[in-house]
Image (cartoon, rainbow over all chains, first blue to last red; front, top):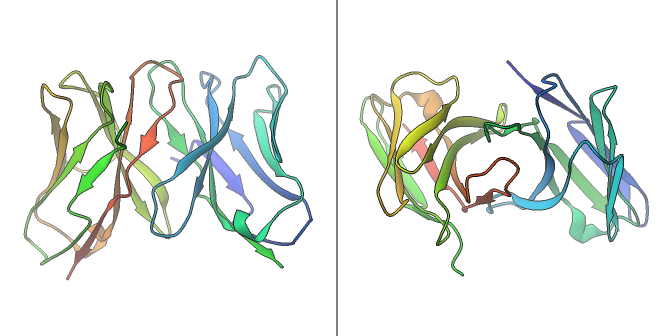
Length: 111
Length: 113
């Protein structure tokens, strides 16, 4: 069963725009929520992560917003650049270190 | 520090055969996880090993198995290959505590014909 639901499946944004990817989880035992970025031919790489004790975390142009009561979290990419074109995965894990991934979002940033 | 290394990078097998994939984790990492990535199913968790013991397991049939050695290197094996096993198999390593970042290798591309 899918424990982390991610949307949209694909996203096209103009250069300079804001990219928003959403995820929802079911298991309230999850307490670590990372986002991974994957370029073609490469393994996923950690982009940014958040824990449920904060509602927002920002690193450069990347921001995670977290809503514990709604069991949702999202990734915002400000001033999106063509180099941001990649597949993004949200994930969640709990005390047992068993990480579950969303289905991925293919982002295309048009110049 | 060297990253996660997976071998082989590409391989083609025939239906019914078996395959073994290898993973060398980042030095000092004791946890190794394996994932299957396909276009339609995303990243599916196979299993995780910590200190030579399987600690977590996903929902895959018994044809998928793994092991970890005392130096933390890991192998996964798929027996009686099916066409649907064609995928990118990713290995990831971490220190093994909850909330630790996991670092992925570049994967092994398996094609079953």
